[in-house]
Image (tube, rainbow, N blue to C red):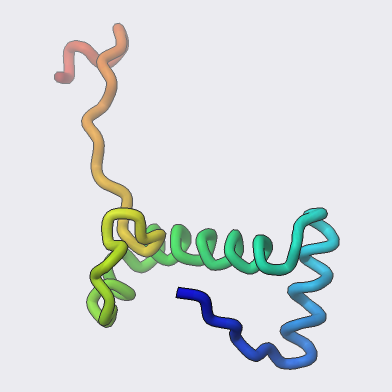
Length: 82
């Protein structure tokens, strides 16, 4: 689904400058910013965006999805704790 948001003059200028800094197109820069925002929100406020979400089509890949807890990898220093 492609959607072209209408940005304010300041928003567009800010995105353009970030794109120049990264050496990437504005579309790719905006996508990276949105993914980074999603990951940050998932860490800082886990589940809050998901509770209000109305689209379950990408839950597995969604950047707002809180990272899964993983078991610690056995190492000599933590073997006695496992």
